[in-house]
Figure 1 (tube, rainbow, N blue to C red):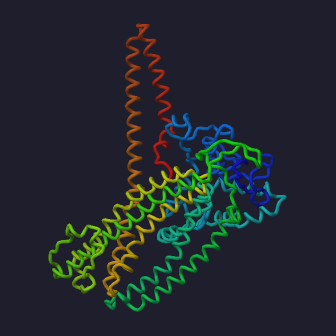
Figure 2: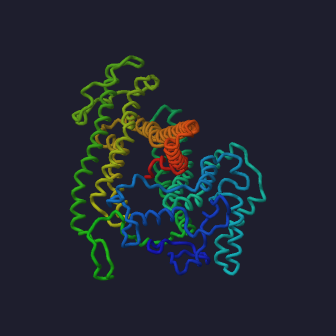
Figure 3: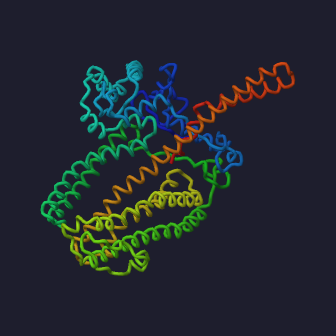
Length: 545
């Protein structure tokens, strides 16, 4: 922890880099109540800090007081898997209050807006400890006074709101303090941004509904209120970012990361030559800068190819959609069967063509035609179905290129990875906007708005739902299937061991057989006992990205 320069909260309320010689000056974390036998443990480090320390020790070199068991070492390659174990009591409390937020048990003693959740016994014990430890120090008492007052007021009031109130109010707030204590600041800031953005999207959604109502009542998609709505979005974006800076500073001060510049250490995966530094006279890993720059330039063509390949694919699908819409307006009347797609539509040459899709007239009858909606929404939906697969391929290629470039620090590694992935996702998500704005801007506003709107509709519905299914539910179902198989195997092995034990009693007189079968039974009992450990169930969880 001292080598990683982890910042912890001191007893005077400030944050300071950890030093072993001054360990008594730091406050314990909130992770001490997870012990099943007692609550009064003293853990200086949070769960996320401990996992960081352990991972650094495992991957670091022996000369750096590590175990040198990283994936790049010969011994580390023999390790099948290494996983951090969850603190199930803490995780279960966080899961119930965060995911199942509408349940009455989560609103007994709190209003649902609290940033911290946990066992009540732990809260009282922790607060009592803070009062005792900071009785001679007013700084710590000032920092936690608001939280103590909130907890004391919540203990006095056990009024539970209605189900509707719990459902809507609870969905807008998250236990950010508890998330930060368990998962770390980076994860907590991510969910804090989602919460902040959701709050402000409510105002924008109300304005959007007003514009949509005007379009529906007048039958004019190009309603004048769209211009006013554009200015509203502009002002809303400015206010959103300004208020987020205030919120970010508040959370940074609360979590001890305000004006904090992390002094990063060398990544354990960093390759290079071990040599002594001429300035500090310490052993360091040296890697020539020209090699990294050369490898970075070597990865640019592949990243550019993937980006422009994705852009070409998006334009080709949207051009095929325009060709089908042009055929629909030329050959069909509403509610008549029309060939949706032709083989010649799916080609790069279709991008250069100028279909007469803008000449078609959108009427109330055409809006009620299922064929029109099938063409307008079918192509973007089909494109978005491939988005998780493309994300997976691009992420794998980007990680390989990043490893090839051999970055020294974690921030450098993440920064270059973000650039590679962002370029692809920006093209994939916003390619349709540039397509309709520049390639197919023939002056027909009505058809352009309709095509762009249906593409965005497919993106925020079909793509979002499909991504949730592929990235959350499919791994969850697969994990449950593996757990079921694991438990079935344990059950069959237990029955087989009981049968073998019965056979050993029948051949009790045979000394040679009795000795052999007893050794087999004892060995299988040890293996079965180890297989029943909950650690194996955690190894079946998906790898954390």
